[in-house]
Length: 249
Image 1 (cartoon, rainbow, N blue to C red):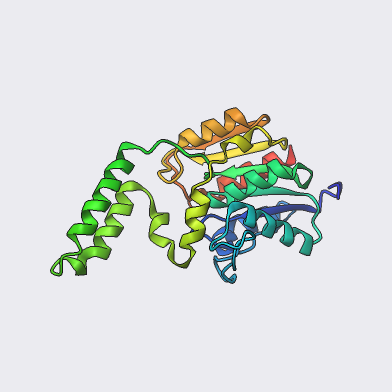
Image 2 (cartoon, rainbow, N blue to C red):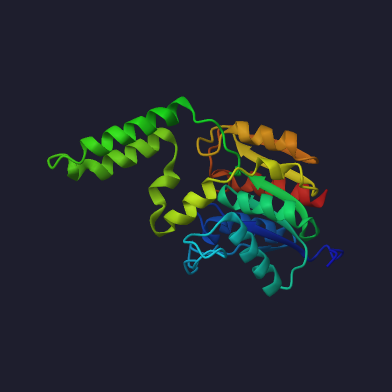
């Protein structure tokens, strides 16, 4: 489907690991007022959606490819053959693979604090890893065991890796997803791409933003000052404005 009616401009939003469609309500409302038809589903295993079953390869946990197929199923259900695609964090992983593998389905691409690039562990992450090993032994002692959950949360906060704290029943999926480096797919993206990032992001470092901007052929990078990982929650108006201007250009 070629998008020619400016009143029908489908935008598909893929939320992050700890997110849901609900977390994008404000941005969705702002963009709907701009004339976009916004789709923001709960990805399988998140929000109000059911947990995903076995992977296509029969193993436990879903891979990024499984989510790409699930998103295409959604598009078929909504009779959308071509969309503008926005992916935040984990949703950015899905968006990168979908745009690179199925360019005919993506009109324009927006990556917001997108995951997908394996960066060398920072000093903070290395210290957190060592602390986790030592802490596991220390807090296994009977008199310290009641404080183990509090210590674990403090460690995740120090390392900036709160996603690890909320893996839960999606543990196998999480491990599959983070094991894949999507950098080789960046050069295959042909859709015009807007990359939006917060300069205080500890979850997905700004180095990833610059790599994506350099390796995606037709990409533009915009950094929001004093903003962390939840760009859509911290500056929804600025985010919606940037997205609208890009999609209207």
